[in-house]
Every structure is written in structure tokens, then in C-alpha cells.
Length: 46
Length: 469
Image (cartoon, rainbow over all chains, first blue to last red; front, top):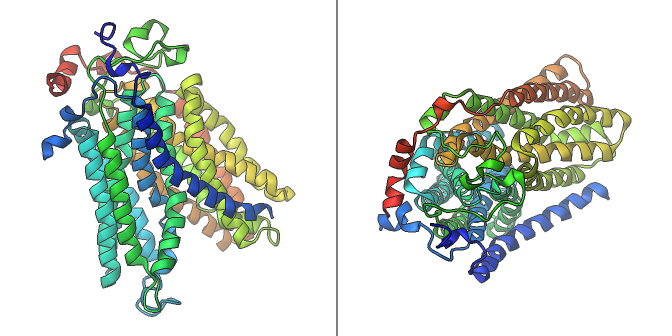
């Protein structure tokens, strides 16, 4: 089945734009959290 | 409407990109990961009446501590009870249920703060929120494992990394909101609960609606490494601890492998809690005069970063070296690091202390992130969400037993005249001992015996609805 019709198993297909947007939506708040934590952590090395 | 959420309606069509599933999973785990930041509410919650300082009638810290404990207990219970339902209902329905529970937990808690009724907080954040935690934790993991049979560790590590990272967003966000809503007559907690409940509802629903399940016959590109040869097609290359067959959730808990992994998770989490629970006072007491309270807070923040990083890196590494070896590293290196912690205190090396604690915490997080992949290697992917749900009772047990053990031993020593800075030595030795026991439990893990696997007929019956769709 998958030989003739690769279907969703072929992950090199489209939707990469949507993938990028989805990652940005979760990545931005996560990076904000990491940045805030790093700022606090800097006190340890002062 | 209900049909819109069913598993049959979300079978991925041609062209669906499986890399959309990890951000969907992260949206859910980053939301429920707020649980690790619940402590930011503790102090303001003790001043609901007094506003600037606790007043008579205000809640006490021990009363408030129960909220988080109840949430962790219900996390384990709901994951264990609803895991089977998740596999049948599909990740979208389960994700929506998680979003509603988690959000409702905040809203009920907000009412509890308004009415100053602690039982509403136990019911809200504790019971409802705990159910949201349990469902929200296992739903993405179960889905990702099915989409990434070739990189199970990395995929689940990405989601579970979100649970570690959720506190890094939740804590400063709560702090900002409480400052924004605070007035001379309110500490702003109830408004913060409402706002956060709504934000998390939107984020988790977005994640749930992005979920798709792989269609029957889903395959992945051919493996480039032996350790990734996990699918039926790649069976000749497959390592012995990775099965292509499936064990039913109701059978899995009857196998010794389930209980060995239960013990592995319980011991790893209990040991990690030994550091997490005492991180701030420990560094201040061991390096008195050298580490201030704000530097200690920075240390705790640093640990949460390493906790998150460990979840992704160790679980990804497990795809290359295998799960058993990964836990082997935790249980070999871990005891040495626990012994290093008091040694660093004795020689006065802050750097060595921080490095040892940070590495320990990466392995604490890594233990959480690698366990779903370990389960799917041993029991197959069909019921991995449900089996994982039942295994999470080990986390609940460790969440209750770990802090009790750590605090009791410390209090006992101080009561018997041991200086505060040295009271950690025995605790660290005990944690090292727990990991040694974990080493032997992990060593005893063998492939599941033939008789426990489902037959082809049983499997076909389980998969019938999805196939029919």
C-alpha cells in the first residue's frame, strides 16, 4: 500500500509553512520563559 | 458535535506533515507545565485577607501545600483511569477534555479565592486541574509515539520538555498578571487565575485541534541507523528490546516489566525530588555568606532550565543508545553525583555543587521523557498512552513519598543536633541508595514473554473502528 501511495508516511511532503508557524507560536513564549529564567539565574554568578 | 472530536474524524490525509504534531503537543505540555510554578501563588494566597501580610483567617502554607499534592495525585489517577479511554476516543477528544479540566480548575479556584473557600481550590486546581494534568500529559505522548516510531525518544522528549518548560512561562506570567491586577484591596490572584485559565484554554484547544492520528499502514522512511529500525518492515535490523507487537493495557500491568519500570520511574523521581525540594535552602546553608537568597532563586531557575534540557537531550540520546542503557547511565552516574553534592559543600566549591546538581536534574527530567519510549519498545504502540497513564501512578507516589522522606530525615537529624549544613549528607546518600536499587530494577528488564502479546485477531478488533473509517 505504502509503496504505491506513500500518503502521510512521506514526511517530506508539504505544509512546511504551517509547521514553521506552529513552531513559532510555541517557540516564542518558550524562549521568553528561557530568557526570563536566564536573567534570574545570572544572579548566581554575580 | 461530538463526532467532530472522534478518532475516526482525525485520521491524517495524504500530505499531512507529521512535524505539525510536536508543536501541537508542546502547546498542551507548556500549558499544563504551569503546575511546576504553582508555588508563585503560595505567598499571595496567604495574604488574601491581610493583603500586605497574613491576617487572622488567612490560609496557611501547609493548608495551601495540599493543593499541589492533590493535583499530582489526581494527575496519576486520571492518567491511569482515562488512558484506555484516550486510546479509544483519540487525542483530539482527550486533548479537549484536558483543556476543559485544566481551564475549569483555574476558574473554580478563582471563585474559591473570591469566596475565600480553600475547598474550592482543592476541588478546582487540585481535582479538576489534576485531571487536566493527567489527560494533558498522556495525550500528546501517545500521539507522538505513533507518528514517530523511528524517533520515539526524541518525539516524546519534545513534548515532555514542554512540561518542564511550562513553569518558565507560567511563573513570570503569573507574576506579571498579579502585579497588573493587584489593588489596595486585592492581591490579584483570582483575576490572574481567570486570565491564565482562559489563555491555557485557547492554547490547549489549538493543540488538540491540530492533532491527527496516523492512518492504518502508516510507515516511516527507511532507517539510517540500527536503533531506529523499529517498524515491522525494518524488523531484521531491530534491537531485541524493541517489539513490533502489542500488549493490551489490561495485560501489561501483569508483566514484571511494567512493575520494574514503575520502580525505575518511582526511584528516579524520588531521588530527583531530593534535590528539587531542597535546592534553595541547601545551597544557602552549605555556602553560608557566599550565596544570597536571590542567587539561590537563580540556582532554582537554572535547575528548571537543566530539567527541561535533560528531557529533550536524554530522550533523544536514548534513540541512539537504547532506553535500557540510558537508564543505566542515570543509575550509574547519578549515585556518584549525589555523593559529589555534599563533597562540594565540604570543599566549598559552588561551581562543583551547581554542576553536580544541574546534571542530576537533567537525569530527573530525562527519566520522565524516556519512559514512554521505553514502554512502547517493550509493550508496542497500540496501548502505550494507557500503559503510560498507569505507570504515572509511580510519579504520584514519588510526589507524595519523596518530599515526606526528605523532610522527615532532615528534621530528624536537626532534632538530634546535626548542623543544618550537614543534615543534607544523609539525604544525599539515601538518594544515591535509591538510584542503586533503580540500577538493579533496570538491569532486570527483559523483553516481554510471548504469552502476553495480543494475537492478530485481538489487534484487528481493537483497530476496527479506525480501519473502518
